[in-house]
Length: 290
Image (cartoon, rainbow, N blue to C red; front, side, top):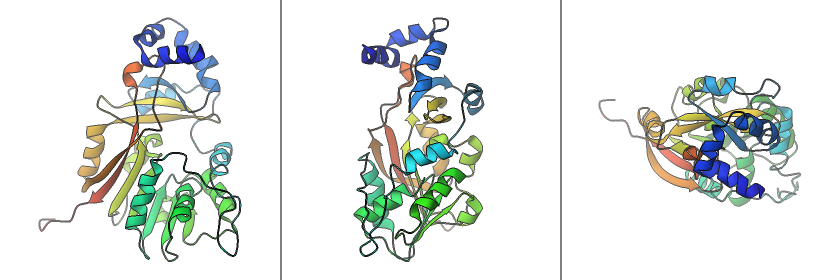
């Protein structure tokens, strides 16, 4: 019965009707959404409107120790054998679309490659990469994230074999890179942070973005319950999203679907996103005019 009610609210016109009944959306927020995880609430035209809708008694954003521990300790190796470097805990790729990111990194990474992993938590992609591919010991993999995640990532990596793995919460100290990776973080960025995504003295040659929410309709924002806090969540207009990179000198080299993640928003079935997306964006060769 609960699954049927969820389906009706999320994916049918009955949900639209229910959302217009006074008090129903608010009761759903208080008694259902608030106690869930990775569930969505509301549709808002701007980041400001979405932020204003976060209940005052709930924590905002990702920069919390509870959330960092919840995500990183479930993903990183527990120990590493000093002789072989083998992980003591079996790492599992929970979303098969992650292999698209790993495959492209394996093709593009060389002995001197500099990877900047934006929103990389405790280096989850790094640990997965080193499990499935040979990591060049002279390459550099820098995780840029919020302070709580950086601290937890350093603790997790301490005493383990992790050549080239660095952590920072300062975009300036992160420096330039050859490959920018942003897997599952762009939609959480504020307008201000997103505008500075490509603030480098020398732009990266390749950008790998995965788990990005796109729509053919107008861009909108929603709220996601992260169990330990609430975050705004941006759904980009597909054309505008790709045009933003096009104007900065990038073109799409590859694209894939992320079917493991969908966005269902109660009372807003027309705003459903049936799967997320991933891209490899390549910087175009400069012309003579440039």
